[in-house]
Picture (spheres, rainbow, N blue to C red):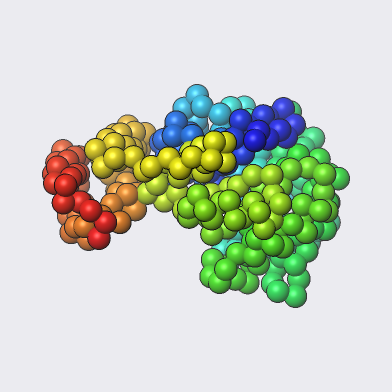
Length: 326
């Protein structure tokens, strides 16, 4: 079940979604190694990239593995310049965010606000597609609200302007992240275009992914919140779709090693203090299903010393026989 769009061929059409504050290079590396077909960067502000903001440019750094860069912005020229930078940084795909519902983004006429201005959305896609050689994709929601579900028409515009794939989150902007994703409506987008369509929203298990594909007719799956603390989930889904077999979760010893590897990579990238602080949320997600998770979260949040954090993690998993699901 491979997927081709432009020059990109994915052996497995299961991808890790762009998530702010989550899908940095260390997390992407883990998810990719564990079987995700493609991994996306955090959402990156095009204006900051074009202005060569040092911190923002660092978000575009990869580790040598294939990755996609997602850009957000409302000005075609700025988005095009940022796309060129992303390509120069090694991105194999440039994705345009037309789905972020956050008020600050929408207020800047970007993210899901572009669903209310299809003409501007088309100009942005066209400008970016002209600026880079790699495939350009678009991530959108099904619409602004229940009365304005225009994803099919926006997807057609995106295709006409040079997009090689679209991803549809099965919620409206008005829903934010509440309610239930409408996987069935994604089928309307699939019918409207000839380019591949990925389905996104409420995929927390192999079974969720299979149901999404069945209900939507999508060509693949993008996984977001389901991968928090579970970078192995996209790989599990990919394995199931390819073989019909259910791959078990990594053992707790393997999970411990992943947490420690993730911690080391974050500290190497950001420095000990900043890396440890950034890892607090990831550690909380990793251990959330396990007995004693709340106590570990409290302890990790109180330490600033990397050695102390390492000891806490090792001690937590050392009681492995007792770390059954809470």
